[in-house]
Amino acid sequence: MSSGNTPSDRERQAQLVAEARRNREHTYREKALKLYPWICARCGREFSGKKLRELTVHHKDHNHDNNPPDGSNWELLCIYCHDNEHARYQTADAYDNARSDHAGEPSPGFRPFAGLEDLLKNKK
Image (tube, rainbow, N blue to C red):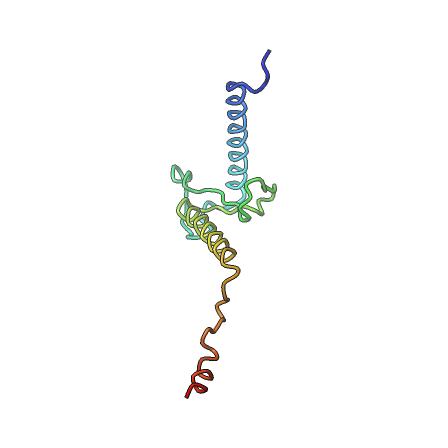
């Protein structure tokens, strides 16, 4: 009897999950292509024929599980603008993490030499 935890069972589960994701992605892409004109929402480039595969569905809230039937969380972006959008999102995350790492440091408004002039006057 199989314990349900053999490598072949895990591989089969991984294949099923991957297939389900592909099917879901295929479905929302088809819906988005029916809802929206085949134009990149950022650069305005138009797509048709074989070039249509370069037009991708971008999730505005970056949650790929949020696929409302009205398409309100989607926009069509060319592969270049889509990559740029995700790079911007990753950069923003990196800056947010960097800020939280420096929480104990002075704020940009900190003036380390604010009282220096008074101190120097007292030395004379």
